[in-house]
Image (cartoon, rainbow over all chains, first blue to last red; front, side, top):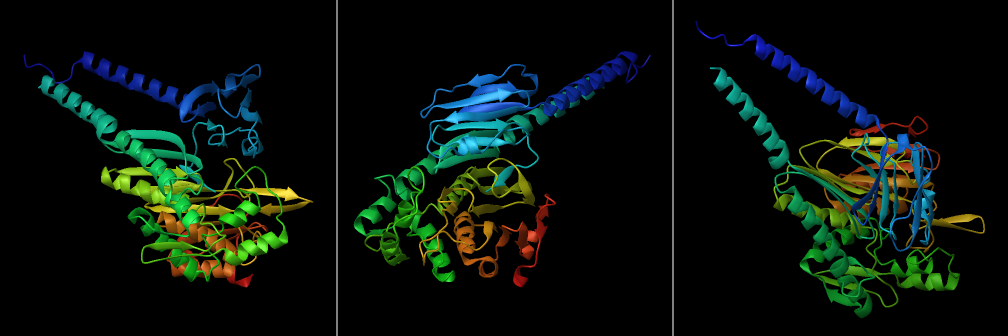
Length: 123
Length: 331
């Protein structure tokens, strides 16, 4: 007998593969809904925080000169204090939504909430 | 037969992986340069090497060529000696600045270093300068560039802060071309380079905001976008606020109701210098100058009115209902 091109096992494997890929896609979609903040010092990531999962205030003091203090609560993160002269980082206020960024140039520290609907911002 | 199908599937799958992971590899990097926060995102076979080179060349360009705070730079040499023979790298950009200075009738001036210092914008915190000191600085704030020679008047200093980020974008573009990059987005602070045959979205920041709030989105490709905003560096004294964009004729911050000017141009140096020039010129003259250069322009004023020329309007979508587009020539 000539072997069939597609057997029952093949169909099962294909369906299983499709299901698996849907699960992976759904997982990726869910993770893209999360509010994740990333803190970098001099271009290197020092902290990654899931802002939705914070229960108690988190205080971060990166090793920088001048000193900065970053605080994170549920759904928000911000420069709480900085020993720099212009305080632009503090004036940036609380970061709450995707794409929000605050930069402390003297301390070379950046907080970003990951994900954004635009590729860049001109200012 | 089955084996052949399986083999084809595996090959197709692998080629997708190779395409995404190697040929069209994405490299993202952040670094501090040109006195600001820089970001690159590059798609291409040699994206990693290219990102490194962009960072190195920006560092070199800042410390050896344009920073007036670096003793080894050409600009600090001209400020010390009054005149220099510009290197090829610098000459190319000075020609653009000189042209903007001329076409703007002197409203764009790259010799305002002393004035900026008197207002305290280079150091910590601002202050209103003594009137006599200021008028002395205004009178000598002159620099010129011709036939490869950059000259500055005694008592004045060349300050390329108004165009340095744009120059850095032009330098970055040379690296992207050298490595045959497919597409990339590079930003030095708020000056952005869009490279390759792919549309990018760039938000125009809500004036006064220091976060990601935006009033409009520009969707375009293959150009540089720069903004001059009065709100970026300002201070208050005796209840009045003062910002960092000066009228070269008075030495005082420009007070014409403009909050920000965004320029879209193929040339980064031009987009940066022109955004400052048009800010100083005001809405009507600013829009005329942008037209002369064939650049897109978006001006936002303190009444939340937005003025655009056709080139900008074709690629810009307003996203904040508080801001409305207005006809430039009726104001």
